[in-house]
Structures are given as C-alpha cells and as structure tokens.
Length: 214
Length: 319
Image (cartoon, rainbow over all chains, first blue to last red; front, side):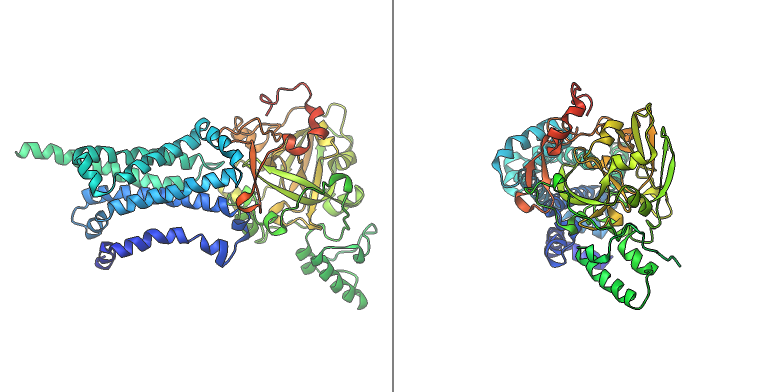
C-alpha cells in the first residue's frame, strides 16, 4: 500500500496513467489490426474515448468521498493531490470523443454539419452528452489557479459542483448509447453513487456532532 | 463418422471459383485419384454445411456502382446477440463448437405440405444457388455491400405451398443455450423471431443466403442459412433459421417485442424516420475510413422495386 501511495503521489506517474488509455487504440488499429475494429476504426475511437472519459470522470469524483471516509488512508491523500489534473484529463477525453463524433457523423463532407446539429438538439441521448461536455469544458477553463482567484474560492467550489450534474448526465448518455442496457454503466457509476451516499451520510454525522461539542 | 456422398445435382469441383474452395478442390482431386470419393468430416466442417454448390453472379441483382465490402469486415463486424453483444464476439464465440452441420429446417403452419428438410436437400430442391450483390443497412446507421450466395425465398416457400389464408411468415432462429453464451445470459428473449408480410416474403428481392463471396456462410453471419431482405434494416434478416411458419396473424419480432417504439414490424430503411436516439438520414460505410459517410436511400435504394408494396401506407406510422 505504501508503494502504491508513493506512485500515486508522483505527478509523472499519474500523467502516464492518464495518457495510456489514449494510446491504447494504436494497438488494435495499427500494431495488431483487428478486423472487428478496423471495419470502422472511427466508431471504435468514438466509443473508446467516450468510455475513458466516463471512467476518468467517475474516478476523479471518487477522490473526495475516499478522503472524507478514510481521511488517514495514504492512497486517498495521494490521489487528492491530483484532482484538477485528473479532472482536466476527463475533459480532454470528452473533447476527443466529441471531435471524433463530428468526423464520424460528417465524414469529410461539410454538408452533413446541419444534420449533426439537428440530431444533437432533437435526441435526448445526444443532448445529454453535449450538456455534460459543456460543463466539463467550463470546469476545465476555470481550473487554473488564476481562475480560482478571479472567481473566489466559494464561487469556484459551487461552480465545480456541476461535475456531479455532468456525471448524472453522462450515466444516462452512456446507458442510452447501446441497443440494450450496457452493464458497464452500473459498474462505473454504482460504486461512485454508493461512495457519495456514504460521504454525505458521514459529513452529516460529523456536522451534527460538531455543534454539540462547541 | 459422417460420410458425405456427393449429390447428383452437384457440379464438378472445377466449377468452383473461390480461392479457398479451389485449394480444397485440389485436395479432393487428390483423394479422387486415390479412389476415395467421400470427403471426411474434418474437411467438411472447414467448408461449412452448404459447401460444394456452384454459384454464379445473377446480373439482374447486381449494380456495378456498388463496391463490395471486404470479406474480413463482413465476417468480423457482426450483430449476433446469441454470441454476445460486441461486434467482435460472434466471430469468436460462434466458432467454439456450435454445430451448424447437419441442419434441418421445418416449414409449417398454414401450408399445404408441412416439411422438414435438410439444408443441402433444400438447396437441391430449389434449384441451386446464385450470387446477388445487395446493400445491407443496419438500424445502427452503418452499411455494407455484400455478395450473398443463396436462392429466392419464394422458391423455398413454394416447396410447402402457402395456403390462401396465410398472410405472414414467421421465422425462428435456433435455440441452444449450451452453445450460445448470449442465450445463456438472456441478453434478449430467445429464440430470436422475425416476420414478414407474405407479399414481402414472395418479393423477388427476398433471399435466403447460404454463402458470402462464394463461400459457405460463416457461423457468425448466420450459418447455414439466413434471411436477406435488402430494403429492411439488418435486424429483420434473421440468422440460422430452424423454422418458418406461415400465419394469419402478424408476428412480433424479438426487437419489436422489446422496444416497439424503436423497432417496428416493417423496419423498412427510411431516411426520413429517425430512430428515437439517432438519425437515420445517413450511414457509416464499413471500410470507408475517414470519409465513410453517405446519405441513406429510401428503401435502401430499392424503392423502384418495393415502394408499391406499401402504396397508401403512412410509413411514419408503420415504421
């Protein structure tokens, strides 16, 4: 555990962990081409980037509850040093997903662009994705220290609570992406929801205790 | 051991054109030279249940403008939920001991003579196979061009003789949870069923495929025989058929039963009627790369041939 804690403290290690899933598609597309992937490599990229964005978002949202629930656990402390970095990575993967969506839906033909926007606004499945992406974009541009100063700590914190809204939208978006319900949505978001419930419950307990003591 | 005797309607091996069959036929010639006329089970399994039938392109069902999708993509990018919901899974999981040879199909219901027929005998009775190059459009908004080998569905139905009160045709896929992991999981309701109106089924475009690119149809594509109705979404094209039933009542397909708002009975390819979650106005061309998107055609490009089947119907209502 100490070893894991040491690794997770290192910014370079976290960077590497965040970049690796982005390089993964090189394997089935170029290194050892898989005909199931190369049949439509763009679709593979679209789903891969979307999936990674979901996982990274769920992971970064788990950091705070882990720290609240187990404040003395070194791993929880270590990962909480990288909250903003991991959060920006979730945005970057979401941006890759959205960019791939445009190429996937439009090919190289600009005449498809109106169709793409019509579909985005008329399909709740796609609209939820776009709103979640807009939220992540907003949080990413306000992640530098200068933005925190400019907004003020409290306002910044409130703004960044929108990440929970994004997670809810993303869970729906991912669930609606397939013809039958994809179970991966459950194993990504159910643990996160449980952690959040436990965290809120614990913070309420503490909140009740503190005024009595004072 | 399973010994195969060549049927009298089988043409000599020299008539076979595809490369893999060419190599196999050399082996057969060698065996023949030794005086061995039967081919052992091993070779037959490698070839598939409906191997050995010569196929020839029918120019009436081929548009030179269509560029066929690569064989590798056709046989690696499959929706066959009986073997998993991933596109890559059927290729893996349908080839782990699931037996598609021998294979018998039952035709029953409102017919003059209910029959049960082995698939090789069936091909003989309908007069052999031919190749047709059809567009294939999945409801998930992707498309291929596939050179199918097989025969017109109407010829098969004629073997049993639909009665006058038969109005619909219901198709059933095999049900064998031991061999099909998706059926064990129950990711859909099995067996998979689909249906057509009788006049749709009798249309000259409606086809039973037993091969692709001159080779017996691989397990992941619905061995040994499947439906191909090129103006409808792919899910109508039920795979690995074991039973065909003529009915008076409109059958309910598996997908329609699960989510009628998204998957209708007709499921005609129609760029103006969207799926609730995505547009059907255009489609990804499998193997098309970065620029692989094209506009979807009404009835998948077969409107001249089939539009009259739906004259006067509101296709937004009967989607």
